[in-house]
Length: 375
Ligand SMILES: Cc1ncc(COP(=O)(O)O)c(C=O)c1O
Image (cartoon, rainbow, N blue to C red):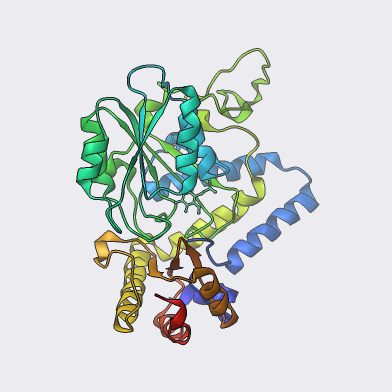
């Protein structure tokens, strides 16, 4: 795609590690410089920064087809999930939280931390590289308060059927929280079509920006029924009430926020999302699908062990290969200017719109060179 030249890293490297960190564009670099300039020249332009915070809220809302009032600007996905957890009451019979085995560890950790508040956690086990719907059917029951599912698994790229799992959960009276961090920016997401209750994600990966900026979507009609206790002055109905004697939560999803927004990251996040939207998420999905298709085909032809489900509808923008020496392999490839990452003996290859078929050829050459490190 012709935006590739906006990412200087491609002058020297094959970069396919977007599941960890999106490549730096000249746009995001300039956004950080703009922040520095504003600081240097204007001091503390809070009015501008508040506008940027609202622009980020709107950009997140547009990305997932939510209303701006349904979006809280957060500093991490963990903060977003914790904020939801803090709003739930586990003292009654509906105290169960169902967590898929494909979750990023932070989800398991946050929900297990709620055991001190009465929550009972049930994990939904994988069957190889998928989690069959029947397993959710079995795990979710009338005692389930919330089901946490990742859209795409950070370890193997496997994609869960969010709509079908949400239908199961809602039929049994449970809420659904989706972690979309590994899919945001690579495929169109529509919280209304999915009918999910919460969705969280951040800008570090396929949204092309930096650590320190994330968001929570909370379904409109739920907001007034939930009172998070992980809060702060930015969660107040009137941020500048400065009332030390009361907590008056915002009527919108802002009640899930806490303190001062991460201002430098607002600049970067806006630049990253603008660039992404200029390409268009539909086009990105088609392009990424072509690249992941070529990676699967090339890997299988060479006899590498693809641990991602092969069917295109069952995986995200990541193809994982089994490797018994995954850290060593990542290091060796890096020496050859191919940047990937690994988790749990899986080599993660995660292309984005900036990758092309030439990258795939160079990747295949690198993998062939080090095939003794692949199983
Ligand atoms: C699917 C998924 N969820 C959550 C996280 C963690 O997000 P944060 O550090 O913003 O809490 C990651 C980070 O890699 C992830 O891949």
